[in-house]
Amino acid sequence: METDPPTNLNGIVPMRFIYRSAEWYERLYPQSAEWAEDCFRLVHRFAERPPRSILDIGCGTGLALARFAGPAIERWGIDALPVMAEAARQKNPDATIAVGDMRDLHLGRRFDAVIMLGGVFSHAKTNEDVSKTMQVLAKHTEAGAVLAIEGINACALLSGAAGQRNWSIDVEADGDCYRGDAEISIDLPNSLFHLKRTWAVGDEIIDVESSDHRFMLPLEMEVHLKHHGFSLVGFADNGQMRPSDMSGARAWLVAVRNAD
Ligand SMILES: C[S@@+](CC[C@H](N)C(=O)[O-])C[C@H]1O[C@@H](n2cnc3c(N)ncnc32)[C@H](O)[C@@H]1O
Image 1 (cartoon, rainbow, N blue to C red):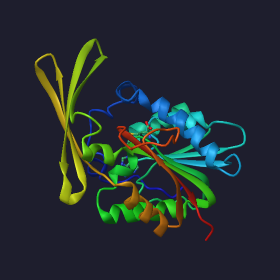
Image 2 (tube, rainbow, N blue to C red):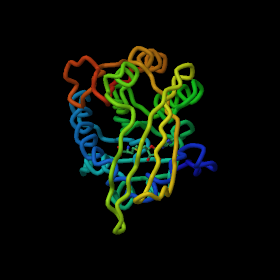
Image 3 (cartoon, helix red, strand yellow):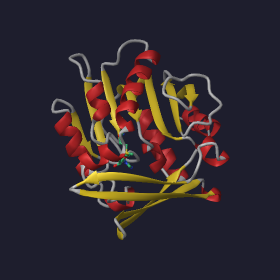
């Protein structure tokens, strides 16, 4: 594989605390298993035939790749963080996993399905990042390939339908109870949301991590996809693509790669 590890990892994924270990990440994001299941069903629903190859971009700990395991499918995953790539490798020893940046990926082959779950796409923050990531998607998909993207739902975030922008989570680990207080603020001119999470054990603050994420509304996403050779076939606030008013906290998009 021609992918070199990115040099400036903190610039790509600044959150050190939530990604400090695979186990920790899976405790914080128990929804990952549900995303993997929904994604498996969506890909099979929209593909003309069962995919013989799949690429998971921002594969995290490899839960979705594991869901796609089977004798007739080649599975590849990339993630910007070595700790995530290593966890994905352990979970999927017969898959090809590498450290890589979704904006600059040259695997030299195309796939029947490409998936990006858990807000990976929102790490493309600038228009240039979005365009580079779209080029990567176009370059790595066969005609008819299914692209599935899941992340924060911008419609609900901006309208307030997603509910409160501050929330807390409690995580038991290493014999301690960690509390993570998250706050989201919105930078409208730059189409970014800023996530700040303060971690404490008891009254002691042990880390503050923050990150910026791009938000895109459905028609904006559709125009980028069209420009890069994809047809949008579904956009909903649920992983079953039920008709929706887009008020749910997360959004799913499915697109199909057009013939060249
Ligand atoms: C919230 S996690 C989602 C992980 C996994 N897809 C899941 O469903 O659990 C976001 C992942 O995106 C990865 N990521 C962020 N920016 C990236 C980039 N530019 N290229 C590749 N991976 C990236 C992070 O390292 C992290 O593993």
